[in-house]
Length: 341
Figure (cartoon, rainbow, N blue to C red):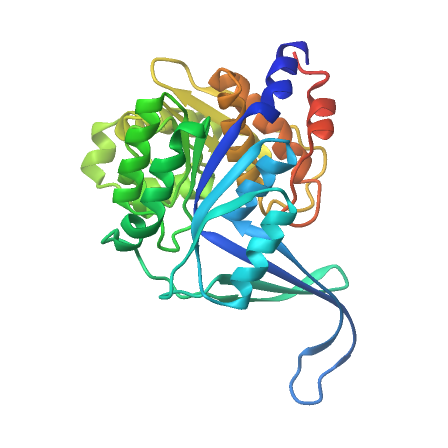
């Protein structure tokens, strides 16, 4: 723990910019005692409704729960859900002056109906409009980012494929990050893999990595020593990750492996496997948001990449033991790291 004490202590001094697809998660909880006479479906008697941040907003929530200053940038619709999302973020001490209304879209809403501790159904409301022409970015987001960029200690791009993360945005952010010498880390959408050149790191999970490999031409995979698209063993993950890192030509690659922990790849170094710290796994939803949040925050606080990955692994081990897209607090993380060597 001693080697991480100064890193954790400085979390509160960091200001992180989160850019990406904002989502409002709604939970409706209730009980079931009968089947509907209208159709063979359970009737849920609603007892409780609440909202939490989702998507890039959940990344921001993870950072805030660790004491960091956070500014989130993205878009919402001109609707009541957008108002609720900004309120939910403000309650968590997350700065929302970088959230802009785009009249072409709805605020993305995911509604989960839960009864007897089981999710019965999920309803998604979204209208995806790609900002590929960068009109919305140039008019709203770019001026904000350029004005305040010097105040940020790290950048997270949270790409859920909902249209806001496009090549002009990524190119602008990476240029600014290099200019100001701050880390920029991406939670990727595999379709956008080549957008992410020159970033500090990307953090795909196993499935996302496999899909990214499938998207490469066979000749390309062969040229970079990638022999398979199926990551069914640690040995294959390590060998394939080395090739993918060379293909991407970025500083590092952090592949999360669920119960298998995670594997860090850095140019010129041997792959580093970090076994999971999870004791019990109740829910893996949101674990990726926790990993990228803690990994990036640790880098901003001066950690080496292998230290940042180890700290993020501890954080992931905590959140998968909770229900829902949970976050980790500084005391929980410090306790988990206490026995770390």
